[in-house]
Image (tube, rainbow, N blue to C red):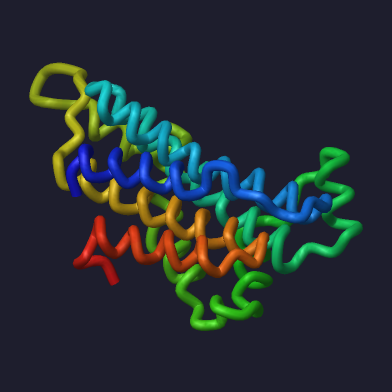
Length: 197
């Protein structure tokens, strides 16, 4: 996946959801804000990759993007009103595994793909966010310390961030029960990425 393609998709997705209107409640405001943050992280990743030699910071944003997506899903689909009020008052949500377990009991998520995705990438995205060995190895080349991120790693990052942003956009449409917007996002994504599953 090229940086140009990912950036073009980012702009298209933003255009699709710009001005999205929904009935407001504490639940919808919290959920949409977190999902929108997930989409914004994709923009941040694209901008940083485009700057060149800021790839470590771009990779560090993938975990916050994933977490804000999962939190947005959970606050929309699973949280009680009391849990939402506590979050607004500053209480942290449950741990990510508990959030995913809750979401996977809801329509459209009962197939277990979220947990499999989390298990597949969690160690790596923690490493990138918290300055682990993957960040260290990506800064060493022969006898010098310099950004040494391989093109296949950048492509992996751009694919993951674009997909997460898309899923966040679809859930935003779901918050407002806007099936037309959800279908437009899915259709546009398939136009941009015809080989995507």
